[in-house]
Length: 283
Image (cartoon, rainbow, N blue to C red):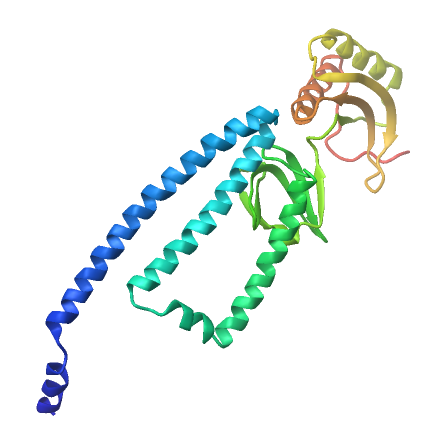
């Protein structure tokens, strides 16, 4: 048995094998260094040229970021494809033969490519129609699934959205069915302050109007209002509330909502009007 193993081991030219191994390791190391340098250089040059071109045609900042992120994504895919090709070549694997004889793997690759093309086409029209840009506040909907947040990046395959708690969502472009962009045009802010059904509505109106008068001219992002709409009963919950509406500049709606909610809340308490913590049902 030992003789068999010995003959089997001795038939290999270990010196040549080690030389080949060392040569491939060195070649791979050089390849990775060159790839790193090339990636940095290409990204730097393209970014410099693209920024100058975008500034020349007068694109806004969010559009610049969107196009730059997209081009970076395309470059990364291309560079990594070249890297994988050269790695396989250095290892002595026949790339063309692997692709030709992939068999079942070819079917899987084809299915993956189909999904990739769907992402690419949908992403292309999202960008062409300028449905979203980097920095926009959006809601992306696909059936019962909705993701809301700020667009961090738009790529050829995925769109990245960061929600309010900091979670970064990677959404395949083919799964984006409905885009609701909250950063396009002015936004309407509705403030519903819960009140008791027995509260003096005229007094609440006076308190809210006083708050509005005190805050007038302090918030240029408010374009229209605040307009006091009055009492209402919320459908489903039966909660009795007092509603105020205003139009604000895009991007300021959340801050304005919280500011005025606090102002109305504090003003009611200062005037001895309790705010119910449970739902009030109509008498």
